Length: 99
Image (cartoon, rainbow, N blue to C red; front, side):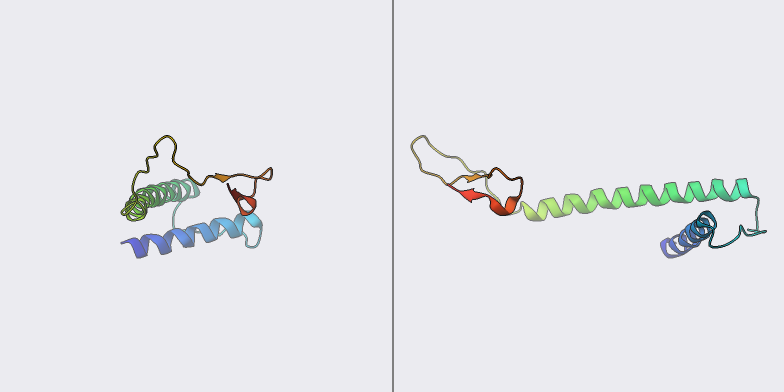
């Protein structure tokens, strides 16, 4: 289902892009009325957005879990010496220094 959905959406986006940029004339027959075609296109793009959003959230959670798997909270006591990464006057992370 995803493959057919993806290819039909890409076809629709391709037709829309080509007609909007003037590379091609508006097709005389899309097999349905223009209003119906645009409503269907809007629905499909909405479905694609929801699908991408759901999977992005899921993958972000997986990446975060994997990244934080071995991390530990750090605590310091008064009097301990620690290194601090201090930003320089520039906003670039390349020029930060340890102090």
